[in-house]
Image (cartoon, rainbow, N blue to C red; front, side, top):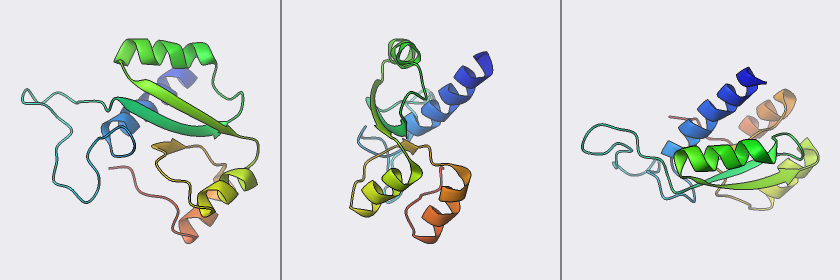
Length: 116
């Protein structure tokens, strides 16, 4: 459980530094995600699209309290639901959690971006 928490924490930290609805830098800007002291600045919000019942709500609450980031946590029931929503035009998610086979499909469809 501790490894899962640390892994998710790392993913959220990386996502919180980037673009998306939280107002962080986007790929088409030259903005930096560090302050004058060189410390990483997290976005105010982190938008997450994940499997239902995948992360305990207590973990989300702890993350929000620890890092001062509001987590917007949307869920899906299947990879097909995830794909359908994204193909219908949903955007603004900082992090999504498709299964392995769906990742290659989404790459081929141009629905994913690399994490910088």
